[in-house]
Image (tube, rainbow, N blue to C red; front, side):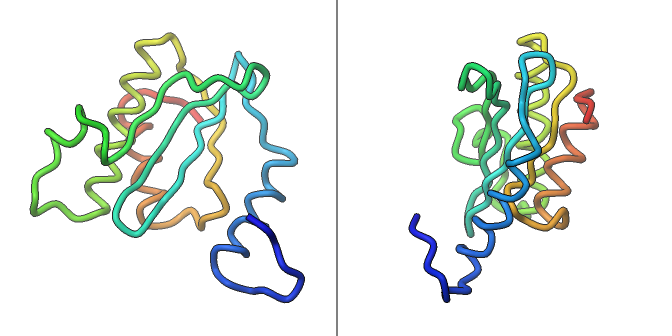
Length: 126
């Protein structure tokens, strides 16, 4: 995405915040990075080892194993919590117990916080 000098759209500002945060937040093989992306309908999360550039575990509201857990009457907040729990289960199954949280330029609030709380409930430390 090209960042224009005088553009202040929400997406551009989020990308700028994320770029600033990514200067310091880095996932290693000992403590990978849990990064989050939120769209209007869905939420996506993955655990990434930045030294190798590999995704170690991923989950989202569009993943088949999560879709069957989601009911039609759930709020997006509840869906985010389920995604966090599913991601934590996958990460723990691959031997990852500690991660660094990358909120992706979003405020730590609402769906982002619900995803983090769901991951913590299942035993992921950050």
